[in-house]
Image (cartoon, rainbow, N blue to C red; front, top):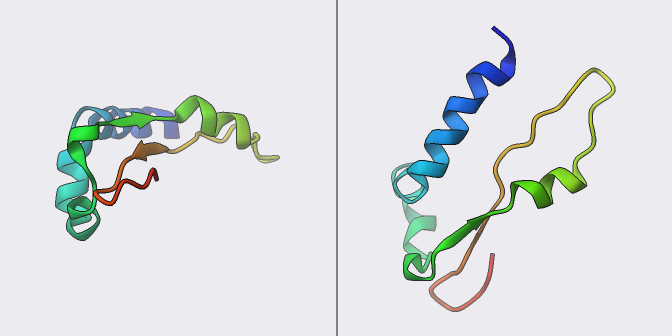
Length: 74
């Protein structure tokens, strides 16, 4: 199986359960996020910055825009 066949289900799960993933794996960070403001996945924006590696195709991880409770955009 290629790497993308293992990677894609995890990325789909993170998109579907993003808040729950952050709350479980990064509880301190999750406390600082204003979940009422929502969040936006910025995969296309990240792909514009990351180039293919010389050794082969490189798959981009997730980039997510969130709002902190203090009003900052991250």
